[in-house]
Length: 106
Image (cartoon, rainbow, N blue to C red; front, side, top):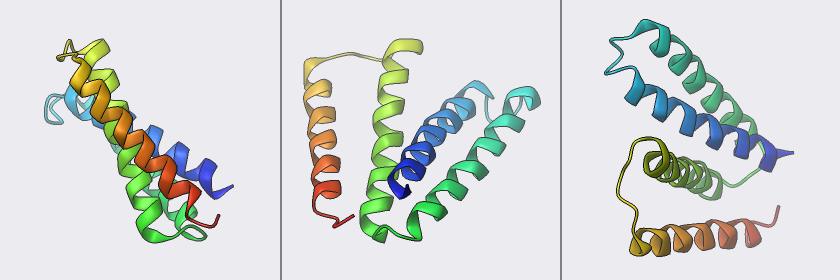
């Protein structure tokens, strides 16, 4: 169950990162409010995962999901640059996260 909590926390991190961009520096309250709720929920689910998972593994996975998710969202929705080098390095990050999970003992 802690890995599920961690995945939820990571996906919420993607959501609040996108929300920060869309809220234009929290100038749009209709977007800023759910963004803050997403932040709180992301930290909550991270805290639940940290009850069981090692700190380094959980934190790296949480930030990795957030980073990779925002890269994908940025390329798809915000017309950020796509390149095979970016895909290669993102794939390396995914491999690193998989390795952390495989060696965490959980």
